[in-house]
Length: 266
Ligand code: ACM
Image (tube, rainbow, N blue to C red):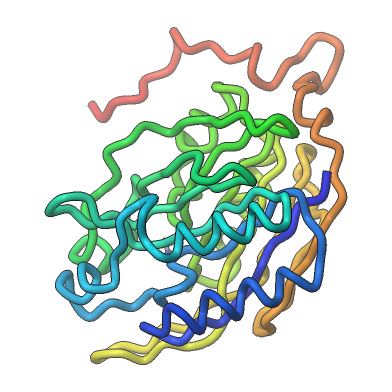
């Protein structure tokens, strides 16, 4: 199957323009599955919770999920993309999965980063896997990368590809951790990061690009530039993520000893 990642440079608050920018880049390529960055259509640096609420959309009825679904139907593909989601009085930093038949799943970021803790509610849905026929997909968002439990939860449920929309600002951190997440779980990971600088309020954030697809052995299949707006499509063999053996006696997931682990703080 073909997996595409989009590395974009959104302008804060310009939802329509950012959305059509991404879709027009995608339309120059063919992929079965696309991964777009976190908060790809709104931008990242909300000044406060009110601003996040004003730009948030309902899922799946909001315009971003609807536009992605229309693209997926027209182009017979699946898309994972990040957006601020409003549900009742809560605003989540979410991602959606849509396909040719419309909306399939949402994920609400569990591990909030920096001022996201002020602007969003932490995700309330457990990590989950969706079988799209050509692959089993898991979603996690940006800072979830630092918590090995995120990718592990997805791998233990059978994820073959972890889709990872991101807005990374700490240089070369997630690029390294995601290679380990791929290796230790024997899965593909697809990190779609953004580039550019957002200077809002008293702060200026520069996003670190280097979006990447990593194979189940931890090696990169592709890594994009630090600063460019780019798209990459890679051909991958999903069945490689089903073989967890590293010797004939060692299985990356099967050799785990859960009874020996302490996963709660003492
Ligand atoms: C991040 O979670 N956006 C770094």
